[in-house]
Length: 487
Image (cartoon, rainbow, N blue to C red; front, side, top):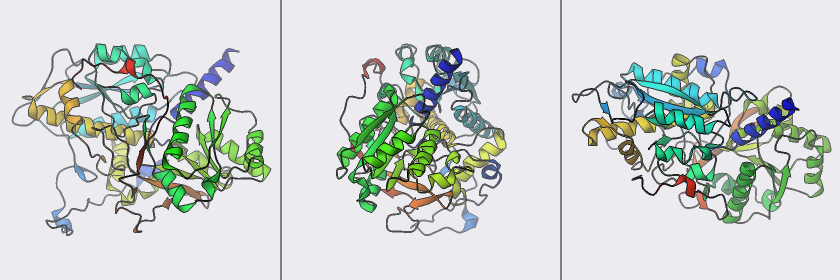
Protein backbone atom coordinates (compact mmCIF):
# COMPACT_ATOMS: atom_id res chain seq x y z
CA UNK A 1 0.00 0.00 0.00
CA UNK A 2 2.84 2.39 0.77
CA UNK A 3 4.36 1.85 -2.65
CA UNK A 4 1.06 2.51 -4.34
CA UNK A 5 0.58 5.70 -2.31
CA UNK A 6 4.00 6.99 -3.27
CA UNK A 7 3.41 6.19 -6.93
CA UNK A 8 0.12 8.04 -6.90
CA UNK A 9 1.65 11.10 -5.31
CA UNK A 10 4.54 11.01 -7.76
CA UNK A 11 2.21 10.94 -10.76
CA UNK A 12 0.23 13.83 -9.31
CA UNK A 13 3.47 15.75 -8.89
CA UNK A 14 4.53 15.11 -12.47
CA UNK A 15 1.10 16.16 -13.71
CA UNK A 16 1.35 19.39 -11.73
CA UNK A 17 4.82 20.21 -12.96
CA UNK A 18 3.57 19.64 -16.48
CA UNK A 19 1.34 22.71 -16.24
CA UNK A 20 3.48 24.98 -14.11
CA UNK A 21 4.27 27.90 -16.32
CA UNK A 22 3.58 29.93 -19.39
CA UNK A 23 6.00 28.68 -22.00
CA UNK A 24 7.20 25.86 -19.80
CA UNK A 25 8.74 23.07 -21.79
CA UNK A 26 10.03 19.73 -20.55
CA UNK A 27 11.79 19.23 -23.86
CA UNK A 28 15.07 17.45 -23.12
CA UNK A 29 17.80 17.15 -25.69
CA UNK A 30 20.59 14.63 -25.92
CA UNK A 31 24.27 15.19 -26.52
CA UNK A 32 23.77 16.55 -30.03
CA UNK A 33 22.08 19.65 -28.67
CA UNK A 34 25.04 20.63 -26.57
CA UNK A 35 27.78 19.56 -28.91
CA UNK A 36 27.02 21.88 -31.78
CA UNK A 37 25.79 25.28 -30.68
CA UNK A 38 26.28 28.11 -33.13
CA UNK A 39 29.61 29.85 -32.74
CA UNK A 40 28.75 32.75 -35.03
CA UNK A 41 29.06 36.25 -33.60
CA UNK A 42 25.69 37.94 -33.09
CA UNK A 43 24.87 40.35 -35.87
CA UNK A 44 24.72 44.01 -34.97
CA UNK A 45 23.07 46.98 -36.57
CA UNK A 46 24.85 50.12 -37.64
CA UNK A 47 23.25 53.52 -37.11
CA UNK A 48 20.20 53.81 -39.31
CA UNK A 49 19.37 50.11 -39.09
CA UNK A 50 21.71 48.71 -41.77
CA UNK A 51 23.67 45.61 -40.92
CA UNK A 52 27.12 46.41 -39.56
CA UNK A 53 30.21 44.67 -40.92
CA UNK A 54 31.07 41.52 -39.01
CA UNK A 55 34.33 43.14 -37.91
CA UNK A 56 32.24 45.54 -35.82
CA UNK A 57 30.62 42.73 -33.84
CA UNK A 58 30.63 43.43 -30.11
CA UNK A 59 33.79 42.43 -28.30
CA UNK A 60 32.07 42.17 -24.89
CA UNK A 61 30.57 38.91 -23.73
CA UNK A 62 27.04 38.57 -25.12
CA UNK A 63 23.99 36.49 -24.32
CA UNK A 64 22.09 36.58 -27.57
CA UNK A 65 21.47 40.22 -28.36
CA UNK A 66 22.08 41.52 -24.83
CA UNK A 67 25.48 42.31 -23.33
CA UNK A 68 26.29 40.07 -20.41
CA UNK A 69 25.31 41.71 -17.11
CA UNK A 70 28.16 39.93 -15.35
CA UNK A 71 31.64 41.34 -14.85
CA UNK A 72 34.38 42.46 -12.46
CA UNK A 73 34.16 45.19 -9.85
CA UNK A 74 33.81 48.76 -11.05
CA UNK A 75 35.75 51.78 -9.78
CA UNK A 76 33.34 51.81 -6.83
CA UNK A 77 34.82 48.53 -5.62
CA UNK A 78 33.23 45.20 -4.81
CA UNK A 79 29.63 45.82 -3.68
CA UNK A 80 28.48 45.28 -0.13
CA UNK A 81 25.27 43.45 0.72
CA UNK A 82 22.70 44.91 3.09
CA UNK A 83 23.13 43.60 6.63
CA UNK A 84 21.15 40.47 7.43
CA UNK A 85 20.17 39.82 3.80
CA UNK A 86 22.67 37.17 2.79
CA UNK A 87 24.04 33.95 4.22
CA UNK A 88 27.75 34.41 3.53
CA UNK A 89 30.50 36.30 1.73
CA UNK A 90 29.36 35.21 -1.74
CA UNK A 91 26.10 36.37 -3.31
CA UNK A 92 23.92 33.43 -2.37
CA UNK A 93 20.99 32.82 -4.70
CA UNK A 94 18.54 30.04 -3.91
CA UNK A 95 17.04 27.95 -6.71
CA UNK A 96 13.85 26.13 -5.76
CA UNK A 97 13.12 22.64 -7.10
CA UNK A 98 11.50 19.43 -5.87
CA UNK A 99 14.27 17.15 -7.07
CA UNK A 100 14.68 15.34 -3.75
CA UNK A 101 11.15 13.92 -3.64
CA UNK A 102 11.96 10.24 -3.33
CA UNK A 103 8.97 8.99 -5.32
CA UNK A 104 9.93 11.17 -8.30
CA UNK A 105 13.68 11.84 -8.04
CA UNK A 106 15.02 14.66 -10.17
CA UNK A 107 11.74 16.58 -10.35
CA UNK A 108 12.57 19.93 -12.07
CA UNK A 109 16.29 19.47 -11.36
CA UNK A 110 17.03 20.93 -14.80
CA UNK A 111 16.37 24.37 -13.30
CA UNK A 112 19.06 23.84 -10.67
CA UNK A 113 21.40 22.47 -13.35
CA UNK A 114 20.93 25.59 -15.48
CA UNK A 115 21.31 27.93 -12.50
CA UNK A 116 24.63 26.33 -11.57
CA UNK A 117 25.85 26.56 -15.16
CA UNK A 118 24.85 30.23 -15.30
CA UNK A 119 26.72 30.91 -12.06
CA UNK A 120 29.84 29.32 -13.53
CA UNK A 121 29.56 31.45 -16.67
CA UNK A 122 28.88 34.63 -14.70
CA UNK A 123 31.65 34.04 -12.17
CA UNK A 124 34.15 33.45 -14.98
CA UNK A 125 33.47 37.08 -15.97
CA UNK A 126 33.82 38.37 -12.40
CA UNK A 127 30.36 37.66 -10.97
CA UNK A 128 28.07 40.56 -10.10
CA UNK A 129 30.58 43.41 -10.20
CA UNK A 130 33.12 41.31 -8.38
CA UNK A 131 30.67 39.44 -6.14
CA UNK A 132 30.79 35.72 -6.98
CA UNK A 133 27.44 33.95 -7.20
CA UNK A 134 26.83 30.82 -5.15
CA UNK A 135 23.76 28.74 -5.92
CA UNK A 136 21.91 27.34 -2.91
CA UNK A 137 19.84 24.22 -3.53
CA UNK A 138 16.34 24.94 -2.13
CA UNK A 139 14.92 21.44 -2.42
CA UNK A 140 11.25 21.50 -1.43
CA UNK A 141 10.97 17.72 -1.92
CA UNK A 142 7.39 18.41 -3.03
CA UNK A 143 5.85 18.43 0.45
CA UNK A 144 8.60 20.20 2.43
CA UNK A 145 8.24 23.71 1.05
CA UNK A 146 7.97 25.42 4.48
CA UNK A 147 11.35 24.01 5.52
CA UNK A 148 12.92 25.03 2.20
CA UNK A 149 11.43 28.50 2.61
CA UNK A 150 13.10 28.77 6.02
CA UNK A 151 16.37 27.74 4.40
CA UNK A 152 15.92 30.53 1.84
CA UNK A 153 15.26 33.04 4.60
CA UNK A 154 18.40 32.16 6.56
CA UNK A 155 20.86 31.31 3.79
CA UNK A 156 20.11 33.37 0.69
CA UNK A 157 19.83 36.90 -0.59
CA UNK A 158 17.11 36.03 -3.12
CA UNK A 159 15.29 33.11 -4.69
CA UNK A 160 16.11 33.00 -8.39
CA UNK A 161 15.34 30.72 -11.32
CA UNK A 162 13.36 27.91 -9.73
CA UNK A 163 9.92 26.88 -8.61
CA UNK A 164 8.03 24.56 -6.29
CA UNK A 165 4.95 22.59 -7.27
CA UNK A 166 3.19 23.63 -4.05
CA UNK A 167 4.54 27.18 -4.13
CA UNK A 168 1.65 28.63 -2.10
CA UNK A 169 3.14 26.93 0.95
CA UNK A 170 5.98 29.48 1.11
CA UNK A 171 3.60 32.11 2.53
CA UNK A 172 3.47 33.92 4.91
CA UNK A 173 7.08 33.06 5.89
CA UNK A 174 8.35 34.48 2.59
CA UNK A 175 7.08 37.92 3.60
CA UNK A 176 8.01 37.64 7.25
CA UNK A 177 11.72 37.38 6.41
CA UNK A 178 11.60 39.97 3.63
CA UNK A 179 12.57 37.51 0.92
CA UNK A 180 12.43 38.42 -2.79
CA UNK A 181 11.94 36.05 -5.69
CA UNK A 182 12.65 35.90 -9.42
CA UNK A 183 10.96 32.54 -10.09
CA UNK A 184 11.42 30.48 -13.20
CA UNK A 185 7.79 29.46 -12.90
CA UNK A 186 4.80 29.77 -10.62
CA UNK A 187 2.02 27.20 -10.22
CA UNK A 188 -0.63 28.56 -7.90
CA UNK A 189 -2.62 31.76 -8.18
CA UNK A 190 -1.09 32.86 -4.87
CA UNK A 191 2.47 32.62 -6.17
CA UNK A 192 1.51 34.11 -9.54
CA UNK A 193 0.04 37.26 -7.99
CA UNK A 194 2.16 37.62 -4.84
CA UNK A 195 4.14 40.76 -4.16
CA UNK A 196 7.85 40.58 -3.39
CA UNK A 197 8.50 38.85 -6.70
CA UNK A 198 9.11 39.48 -10.40
CA UNK A 199 8.73 36.65 -12.91
CA UNK A 200 10.49 36.88 -16.28
CA UNK A 201 7.67 34.97 -18.00
CA UNK A 202 4.64 35.99 -15.92
CA UNK A 203 1.80 33.53 -15.43
CA UNK A 204 -1.07 35.41 -13.77
CA UNK A 205 -4.31 33.41 -13.47
CA UNK A 206 -6.47 36.21 -14.87
CA UNK A 207 -4.46 37.13 -18.01
CA UNK A 208 -3.58 34.34 -20.41
CA UNK A 209 -1.58 33.99 -23.62
CA UNK A 210 -3.92 33.59 -26.57
CA UNK A 211 -1.71 33.24 -29.66
CA UNK A 212 -2.21 29.46 -29.89
CA UNK A 213 -5.99 29.72 -29.81
CA UNK A 214 -5.97 32.68 -32.20
CA UNK A 215 -3.99 30.51 -34.62
CA UNK A 216 -6.54 27.71 -34.29
CA UNK A 217 -9.43 30.12 -34.82
CA UNK A 218 -7.85 31.62 -37.94
CA UNK A 219 -6.36 28.55 -39.60
CA UNK A 220 -8.54 25.67 -38.39
CA UNK A 221 -11.96 27.26 -37.85
CA UNK A 222 -13.89 24.03 -38.40
CA UNK A 223 -11.82 22.18 -35.80
CA UNK A 224 -12.78 24.51 -32.95
CA UNK A 225 -16.49 23.75 -33.26
CA UNK A 226 -16.48 21.12 -30.53
CA UNK A 227 -13.44 21.27 -28.22
CA UNK A 228 -12.74 19.00 -25.29
CA UNK A 229 -10.38 19.49 -22.37
CA UNK A 230 -9.11 16.40 -20.56
CA UNK A 231 -7.52 17.03 -17.18
CA UNK A 232 -6.45 15.25 -14.01
CA UNK A 233 -9.12 15.76 -11.39
CA UNK A 234 -6.85 17.57 -8.95
CA UNK A 235 -7.19 21.13 -7.72
CA UNK A 236 -4.28 22.61 -9.68
CA UNK A 237 -4.87 20.76 -12.95
CA UNK A 238 -8.59 21.45 -12.71
CA UNK A 239 -7.82 25.15 -12.26
CA UNK A 240 -5.62 25.17 -15.38
CA UNK A 241 -8.35 23.39 -17.36
CA UNK A 242 -10.84 26.05 -16.28
CA UNK A 243 -8.40 28.76 -17.33
CA UNK A 244 -8.06 27.18 -20.78
CA UNK A 245 -11.84 27.06 -21.08
CA UNK A 246 -12.12 30.68 -19.99
CA UNK A 247 -9.49 31.67 -22.57
CA UNK A 248 -11.54 30.05 -25.34
CA UNK A 249 -14.62 31.90 -24.13
CA UNK A 250 -12.76 35.22 -24.01
CA UNK A 251 -11.47 34.80 -27.57
CA UNK A 252 -14.85 33.70 -28.91
CA UNK A 253 -15.74 31.43 -31.82
CA UNK A 254 -15.06 28.18 -29.95
CA UNK A 255 -17.80 25.72 -29.14
CA UNK A 256 -18.64 24.97 -25.51
CA UNK A 257 -15.74 22.80 -24.28
CA UNK A 258 -16.48 19.30 -23.06
CA UNK A 259 -14.73 18.98 -19.68
CA UNK A 260 -13.45 15.44 -19.07
CA UNK A 261 -11.78 14.70 -15.72
CA UNK A 262 -9.43 11.74 -15.23
CA UNK A 263 -7.79 10.06 -12.30
CA UNK A 264 -4.99 12.48 -11.25
CA UNK A 265 -2.64 9.56 -10.69
CA UNK A 266 -3.16 8.28 -14.23
CA UNK A 267 -5.49 5.88 -15.99
CA UNK A 268 -4.89 2.18 -16.47
CA UNK A 269 -6.94 2.25 -19.67
CA UNK A 270 -7.39 5.27 -21.94
CA UNK A 271 -9.66 3.52 -24.44
CA UNK A 272 -12.91 4.67 -22.79
CA UNK A 273 -11.75 8.28 -23.10
CA UNK A 274 -10.81 7.81 -26.75
CA UNK A 275 -14.20 6.20 -27.39
CA UNK A 276 -16.00 9.09 -25.70
CA UNK A 277 -14.21 11.58 -27.94
CA UNK A 278 -15.35 9.57 -30.93
CA UNK A 279 -18.95 9.13 -29.73
CA UNK A 280 -19.34 12.84 -28.98
CA UNK A 281 -17.70 13.96 -32.21
CA UNK A 282 -15.03 16.06 -30.51
CA UNK A 283 -13.14 18.06 -33.13
CA UNK A 284 -10.46 19.69 -30.95
CA UNK A 285 -8.63 18.29 -27.95
CA UNK A 286 -6.38 19.74 -25.24
CA UNK A 287 -4.97 17.63 -22.43
CA UNK A 288 -3.82 19.20 -19.17
CA UNK A 289 -1.19 16.85 -17.82
CA UNK A 290 2.08 15.20 -18.64
CA UNK A 291 3.27 13.92 -22.04
CA UNK A 292 3.16 10.25 -21.03
CA UNK A 293 -0.61 10.37 -20.63
CA UNK A 294 -0.99 12.19 -23.95
CA UNK A 295 0.93 9.41 -25.67
CA UNK A 296 -1.24 6.73 -24.10
CA UNK A 297 -4.39 8.61 -25.11
CA UNK A 298 -3.07 9.05 -28.64
CA UNK A 299 -2.46 5.32 -28.97
CA UNK A 300 -5.97 4.63 -27.67
CA UNK A 301 -7.42 7.08 -30.19
CA UNK A 302 -5.56 5.32 -33.00
CA UNK A 303 -6.98 2.01 -31.80
CA UNK A 304 -10.58 3.22 -31.88
CA UNK A 305 -9.96 4.87 -35.23
CA UNK A 306 -10.69 8.44 -34.23
CA UNK A 307 -8.39 11.40 -33.67
CA UNK A 308 -9.88 14.90 -33.39
CA UNK A 309 -9.05 17.25 -36.27
CA UNK A 310 -6.85 19.31 -33.95
CA UNK A 311 -4.88 18.21 -30.89
CA UNK A 312 -3.46 21.41 -29.43
CA UNK A 313 -1.56 21.32 -26.15
CA UNK A 314 0.52 23.53 -23.89
CA UNK A 315 4.30 23.77 -24.02
CA UNK A 316 5.16 20.90 -21.70
CA UNK A 317 4.11 18.47 -24.44
CA UNK A 318 7.01 19.68 -26.57
CA UNK A 319 8.91 16.66 -25.32
CA UNK A 320 11.30 14.08 -26.67
CA UNK A 321 8.86 11.45 -25.40
CA UNK A 322 6.45 12.40 -28.14
CA UNK A 323 8.85 11.48 -30.93
CA UNK A 324 10.62 8.58 -29.23
CA UNK A 325 10.68 5.21 -30.96
CA UNK A 326 7.24 3.66 -30.76
CA UNK A 327 5.48 6.97 -30.08
CA UNK A 328 6.07 9.22 -33.09
CA UNK A 329 3.68 7.35 -35.36
CA UNK A 330 0.88 7.66 -32.81
CA UNK A 331 1.48 11.33 -32.01
CA UNK A 332 1.84 12.47 -35.63
CA UNK A 333 -0.05 15.71 -36.06
CA UNK A 334 0.01 16.98 -32.48
CA UNK A 335 0.41 20.74 -32.18
CA UNK A 336 2.04 22.48 -29.20
CA UNK A 337 2.50 26.15 -28.38
CA UNK A 338 5.65 27.63 -26.90
CA UNK A 339 7.14 31.03 -26.15
CA UNK A 340 10.72 29.70 -26.01
CA UNK A 341 12.95 29.28 -29.03
CA UNK A 342 12.81 25.66 -30.26
CA UNK A 343 15.90 23.56 -29.74
CA UNK A 344 15.76 22.59 -33.42
CA UNK A 345 16.55 26.21 -34.30
CA UNK A 346 19.63 26.80 -32.14
CA UNK A 347 21.65 27.59 -35.26
CA UNK A 348 19.25 30.49 -35.94
CA UNK A 349 19.07 31.85 -32.40
CA UNK A 350 22.24 33.20 -30.74
CA UNK A 351 20.63 33.26 -27.27
CA UNK A 352 19.63 29.60 -27.44
CA UNK A 353 23.06 28.72 -28.83
CA UNK A 354 24.65 30.56 -25.90
CA UNK A 355 22.43 28.69 -23.43
CA UNK A 356 23.58 25.37 -24.89
CA UNK A 357 27.19 26.53 -24.91
CA UNK A 358 27.01 27.54 -21.24
CA UNK A 359 25.48 24.20 -20.27
CA UNK A 360 28.14 22.30 -22.19
CA UNK A 361 31.00 24.23 -20.62
CA UNK A 362 29.88 24.79 -17.04
CA UNK A 363 27.55 21.86 -16.32
CA UNK A 364 28.03 19.21 -19.03
CA UNK A 365 26.19 16.57 -17.01
CA UNK A 366 23.18 18.83 -16.43
CA UNK A 367 19.82 18.27 -18.05
CA UNK A 368 19.00 20.33 -21.13
CA UNK A 369 15.36 21.39 -21.06
CA UNK A 370 12.99 24.29 -21.49
CA UNK A 371 12.78 24.68 -17.72
CA UNK A 372 16.49 25.41 -17.80
CA UNK A 373 15.88 28.25 -20.25
CA UNK A 374 13.35 29.69 -17.81
CA UNK A 375 15.92 29.50 -15.01
CA UNK A 376 18.55 31.33 -17.07
CA UNK A 377 16.08 34.03 -18.08
CA UNK A 378 15.39 34.64 -14.39
CA UNK A 379 19.11 34.75 -13.60
CA UNK A 380 19.76 37.30 -16.33
CA UNK A 381 16.90 39.50 -15.14
CA UNK A 382 18.13 39.32 -11.55
CA UNK A 383 21.74 40.27 -12.37
CA UNK A 384 20.65 43.11 -14.63
CA UNK A 385 18.41 44.42 -11.85
CA UNK A 386 21.17 44.00 -9.27
CA UNK A 387 23.46 46.16 -11.38
CA UNK A 388 20.81 48.87 -11.62
CA UNK A 389 20.31 48.72 -7.86
CA UNK A 390 24.05 49.14 -7.23
CA UNK A 391 24.05 52.20 -9.49
CA UNK A 392 21.23 53.84 -7.55
CA UNK A 393 22.06 52.64 -4.04
CA UNK A 394 25.69 53.64 -3.42
CA UNK A 395 27.03 50.21 -4.42
CA UNK A 396 24.96 48.43 -1.75
CA UNK A 397 22.92 45.41 -2.80
CA UNK A 398 19.54 45.40 -1.05
CA UNK A 399 16.56 43.16 -1.74
CA UNK A 400 13.76 45.68 -2.23
CA UNK A 401 16.10 47.84 -4.30
CA UNK A 402 16.81 44.97 -6.71
CA UNK A 403 13.12 44.15 -6.89
CA UNK A 404 12.19 47.77 -7.57
CA UNK A 405 14.63 47.87 -10.49
CA UNK A 406 13.20 44.65 -11.91
CA UNK A 407 9.70 46.10 -11.79
CA UNK A 408 10.87 48.83 -14.17
CA UNK A 409 11.49 46.18 -16.85
CA UNK A 410 8.47 46.11 -19.13
CA UNK A 411 10.05 44.42 -22.15
CA UNK A 412 12.10 41.26 -21.69
CA UNK A 413 13.35 38.51 -24.02
CA UNK A 414 16.50 37.35 -22.17
CA UNK A 415 18.58 38.32 -25.16
CA UNK A 416 16.20 36.61 -27.57
CA UNK A 417 15.82 33.36 -25.64
CA UNK A 418 12.03 33.69 -25.62
CA UNK A 419 9.16 35.84 -26.84
CA UNK A 420 8.79 39.31 -25.36
CA UNK A 421 7.12 39.52 -21.95
CA UNK A 422 6.39 42.26 -19.42
CA UNK A 423 7.86 41.24 -16.04
CA UNK A 424 7.25 44.60 -14.37
CA UNK A 425 3.60 44.61 -15.37
CA UNK A 426 3.19 40.88 -14.63
CA UNK A 427 1.92 40.30 -18.17
CA UNK A 428 2.59 37.16 -20.22
CA UNK A 429 3.95 37.19 -23.78
CA UNK A 430 1.64 38.29 -26.57
CA UNK A 431 3.70 36.31 -29.07
CA UNK A 432 4.19 32.61 -29.63
CA UNK A 433 4.78 29.87 -32.13
CA UNK A 434 3.35 26.43 -32.85
CA UNK A 435 5.48 23.30 -33.00
CA UNK A 436 4.20 20.01 -34.33
CA UNK A 437 5.14 16.40 -34.89
CA UNK A 438 5.58 16.17 -38.65
CA UNK A 439 6.95 13.00 -40.25
CA UNK A 440 8.03 11.77 -36.84
CA UNK A 441 10.04 14.82 -35.77
CA UNK A 442 9.36 18.15 -34.10
CA UNK A 443 9.10 20.95 -36.64
CA UNK A 444 7.95 24.56 -36.69
CA UNK A 445 4.37 24.74 -37.92
CA UNK A 446 3.53 28.43 -37.43
CA UNK A 447 4.50 31.07 -38.24
CA UNK A 448 6.59 30.22 -41.25
CA UNK A 449 9.81 32.18 -41.06
CA UNK A 450 9.75 35.11 -43.42
CA UNK A 451 5.98 35.00 -43.84
CA UNK A 452 3.60 37.89 -43.18
CA UNK A 453 2.80 36.36 -39.78
CA UNK A 454 6.46 36.34 -38.69
CA UNK A 455 7.47 39.39 -36.64
CA UNK A 456 11.01 39.05 -37.96
CA UNK A 457 12.22 36.95 -35.03
CA UNK A 458 10.15 33.85 -35.68
CA UNK A 459 7.16 34.77 -33.51
CA UNK A 460 3.53 35.48 -34.27
CA UNK A 461 2.57 38.51 -32.22
CA UNK A 462 -0.73 40.24 -31.52
CA UNK A 463 -0.49 43.30 -29.31
CA UNK A 464 -4.24 43.57 -28.83
CA UNK A 465 -5.38 39.95 -28.52
CA UNK A 466 -2.14 38.11 -27.81
CA UNK A 467 -3.07 38.00 -24.11
CA UNK A 468 -6.69 38.03 -22.95
CA UNK A 469 -8.29 38.76 -19.60
CA UNK A 470 -10.32 35.86 -18.26
CA UNK A 471 -12.84 35.55 -15.48
CA UNK A 472 -13.19 32.84 -12.86
CA UNK A 473 -12.47 31.81 -9.30
CA UNK A 474 -8.85 30.69 -9.39
CA UNK A 475 -8.03 30.79 -5.69
CA UNK A 476 -7.62 33.11 -2.70
CA UNK A 477 -4.44 35.12 -3.15
CA UNK A 478 -4.68 37.22 0.03
CA UNK A 479 -2.16 35.04 1.91
CA UNK A 480 0.51 35.94 -0.67
CA UNK A 481 0.00 39.71 -0.50
CA UNK A 482 1.80 41.75 2.14
CA UNK A 483 0.53 45.35 1.88
CA UNK A 484 3.35 46.61 4.11
CA UNK A 485 6.04 45.75 1.56
CA UNK A 486 7.18 48.54 -0.78
CA UNK A 487 7.13 46.20 -3.78
